[in-house]
Length: 611
Image (cartoon, rainbow, N blue to C red; front, side):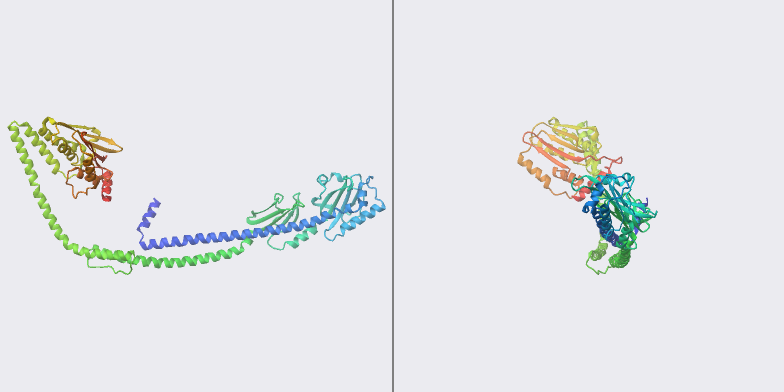
């Protein structure tokens, strides 16, 4: 109901309002779509570029840490350059026994090289021999040669499986005095260069503050947050408070994604180091990234509103220019409707509206002339009606005369004359006493039977007439006076020339939703040339000017004119095998008032108009 109400409301609106509404829709809709697409595309471009930049920054940050860790790895290989240290690790000794002078000198040289490298801030060094040798130098402590229980450390299993360095995540160690140090470590298994035998392990402790200071130097933006997570899931470094409590251990590998934290959307980039297995995580708020897009959005909205305002002004102006001549034409038409025929519309353009105005002016001028002719036409119409009323006297006189003849014949005992007179009277009434174009098939069949009754008296036993029509077809409509001419044609061409006795068969059947009526005789038939000429005449003959004409040609054209070119009359004949005339008609039901169905009537009237 609401849709129908809106549609009716729109239909009642003036043409000016419709033009303005259509113009606004055609302007605002593309403008809104273009602005939205532009803004979203620009925002996506900014996000992609920032994401790429942030990915590059995280990759560079991870590369700097890897470089630092590789330096630490090189330091862990220094024992291979000092044979005395390797012999110390390979020696079998009891726990806590101090090394020899040469071994102590070699260990001190190793400590000097490791601690004074200038690149990595090493604060502790541990050597563990497989046969009991041990050298432990904790941060801010003196060296000692006892390390009970080192084989139970968690890093031992991982380091024993490879000769590469194994990084130990953030943990706490204490000096001899009990002071705590936050460090991360590198453990490496040492093997004999001659035999490949496992000799022991070296572990280096690095102060975590050195790594944090490097990360602070590489991360300068006040809006970004950076975190470094070791392979155990512990946070090595954080900048900002947002990532300190986040479960960051799940980010492994490399990638960039949008996350929502504390009700705000952020761009998060992470990368896991192939050297240490540690993951660098960096986040930037989307609001910061899209700050420039806000100004762009304001500019797009401002320009869009300005264009929309300009479009409204132009649409109103153009709509007025288009509809003003139509409004002027409408007002003049109303004056003509009131009877003022001396008006005209000024023509200001040569477009469709100008041509319409010119045609209207011509129509009004002709109406003025037709007004004078109308009176004369009405007088003539009255005269025609009077003449028609007078002409009706003749048929009534003829009917009365035939009735008198029938009465005197019956008194004289001439039954044939009575029957012929009565049949002739009914034929005349049917032919000229009705103004209906279509009648039930039963009435048309009754008319043909009356005609054949007269012909039967004339030809006596030479002529036999047979009808084969089912009762279910008798109620369908046919054009009045289309069967009698066909039957008459069979008599004239089949039997009137002395062919002898013969039979005319009238039948009707249903065929593909239509009704086919066939009139066949067993007369002499036609030669092929004559049949071809008759068929050509039926198809090419012009339409009749009125309802009159009862020949085969006119019967065909009346059917085609009423129902369309799909329907009509066909003839089939041959020498010695008679002639068959077939009429194809639609199945048109008759209403109770004796008229054909209105739906069918309108359909065939439309066919007639197109013909």
